[in-house]
Length: 323
Image (cartoon, rainbow, N blue to C red; front, side, top):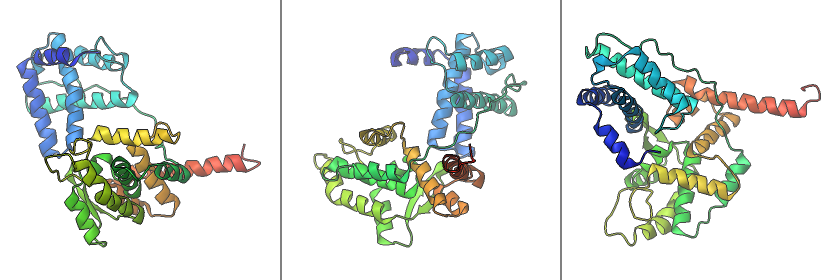
């Protein structure tokens, strides 16, 4: 793999005209389209790799990009090259969309007169059902967390919150003390979170999440902040008394899951489980859509496929004429 020093050298060799092109495009998608910081960062990563490829091929300006260059780049996404591993199908599709959108932007803004990516076809992905944990697995995961140490109290509060509300990990780590205190002060209001596109929604706090967070606030968070000479508004903090990062939060979920024998568990697994268990319990899909913060109900409908698949599996295993 390429070292960070070597990679920085390659980025610096990208011609300024290509860099300006990318900068203008990212400004457009982040400001005018209101994309989240995470989505914009993903576009930046994908397109920086694309511009590095173009620069290595001798392309100095968007006008110089040929259809052959675009096709050559997309081929490296699946095969890999000297500095990149082959991407998974979903990542290939995302990168292809990014390239196609970048060239569409150039055409609309009169940066170019043709679109060499106009014939690109985004690879179709098979529909993957989200992996939901069984209720017994969730119970084992949460019960196994020691709640006597500051770190254990924090981890329990984080996981109870993720499963109890279905929020994204990026939403959880952005919560401040003021946010949670407002939710505690008014049970009818709930917890305000900032989702994709900086859209706000209100989530009810269940008794388990509420109790875990209160225990963390009383006995966990003060201990984690004890040695720090600075304060932070963040609810979830790390051992350095700063806001917990997205990567650290992912690691917490994975370590806690592996401790009880659960593999391939991510924060999204808890979100999937939240939605699936609500639907299994009879919740209306529109309510689940609102709680998850989905802009369109069709996004939420994939969870109905999970419950149907579960019914099919039970039928096949239990009925004598099903197989």
